[in-house]
Length: 411
Image 1 (cartoon, rainbow, N blue to C red):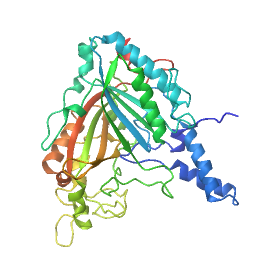
Image 2: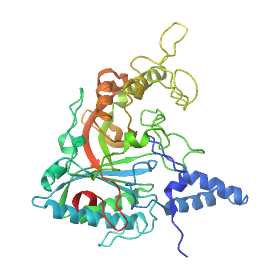
Image 3: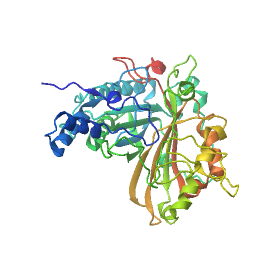
Image 4: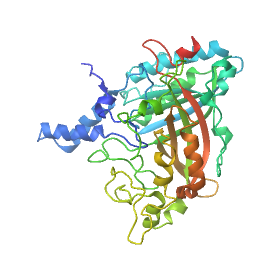
């Protein structure tokens, strides 16, 4: 009997992405299984939980692309492709039609039409999502310069950036996420092979987040600095969320969003040399539980005016939570969805590890740009970070049933 796919949105309770926040569906289902059958052993419950997690499916078709408001999965592949010379608008349409059809099948847990390597043949969809975006250069190549959005203007240079052009930008951006590494890699390889002759790989990056079920209760994950990361992320239920994250207007981008993608290396040797109390003052939150230094628990609103017995600010003037706060940036808001990465050792002998950061917003000029300018000038955390690759992409609305991503632009 074929199992009915479980909606990942149902498994995660509709939780919006929060930086590195991820649901723990597997752990929750395991506890439910034990409650229903007190004689069941832990291994048996874990097996049932894992099976349900594998069946989790996120619909590909819909008004918005998947992989934006869903909680971050355990694994991700990012990639950028450049169109082959002479491909033009028709070739771009052909590629996106093929990619969309394949993504819809794989998201349902079906096989791809074209020959594949059967890497994930014995796995379910595992919450597989695909997100596609257009880089600025693709519009000229496809003869669509007059339809390139003004919000896709190049990002400015920021102080201390060390951007590698070979690992930045690109005509097409693809994000593939799932809760199983083989499922993610398989999906990427299928799309890469289907692009042959139409687009070539420019760069790719792999990241990870907490595995569902790794904690006894849902918790905001920690980044590689050991800090709880994602507490202050906006949620779909928040007032103004739609207007700040998704594009308005009446053109083909209505209901879409803009993704700023950054590979941010963490200077872990330097960071780990700091005592915990110094780390906490750099961030503005306690490392143990994520509570703000102004008092309270993780989700207590940060009080930027709070002072100690000596009259000094409890949250330092250059603390990350202060400098990055929307209130300190004219209300600028981004929906962050990040993953950790670890790529061995860098040329300087330090860990090549950090954060694959993506921020979704209605207008980068009003979201990422002013916030990053302020962070680059006054954030104490910036001394321990190095932005090494960057990209800006127009992420169109979702594909209609039987249609393809980008149809509003290309048809």
